[in-house]
Length: 307
Image (cartoon, rainbow, N blue to C red; front, side):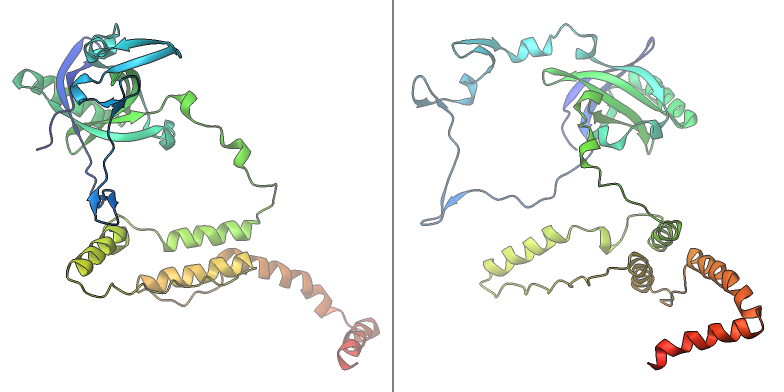
């Protein structure tokens, strides 16, 4: 069972729900240390006091705020825990909003909030069921690690999850990244929608959503441990140079269907058929035209091809 990161309470109007916080995620990445390659001795980072020129223990290290190069204000962990904020001891719910009203770029790390003792069981369950029925999420404020944060509360399998959120002014404006003005046809949009539909699925289960990097790294470590040859690196497929956007979309739909074992035959996209019908409709009056004028047009049309 993961250790508790923080203990406090959810404040919901006059209702208080004592909780303790646990991380909702795990990192399974393979970690490396630094070594001296000549003798494989471990290379470590040592903490040295610049004034005394000596290594100091962790118990001697604290936090400080640099006002000037010569004046530093020390701040203790106890002072950080006793910040004069209502959110220092509680997760204060400020509002309830639809989830789709929050830009996902604001949402960060997730934490499970577990009820702290029997006294918290009923108000905890009350908040879980209220959130579930309202189809909304709660936006709250809380203070951890020396700063006040914004958070999002939602329900996952009857457990309240707290997501850290970035403040609106922490999100950079993407306007400068916009591409040059360009036009996209309705036919191309329909082609992209067809590709999205061919790639749609109900879940994120299966080999496509497994950590291939960690698995490959584990194979390399095992091969080196057993003094075997390293696994061969598969040759990546070279993407073809496609200048026609519609051709690229059509081919992508075909590949997506083939990879899922579906019928790989891809017919013309609906929007493309519609465009072809419009072209035929315009040409029909010319076919019905009779007489010398029509004959002259046909004759003049053959001369360039026989030249």
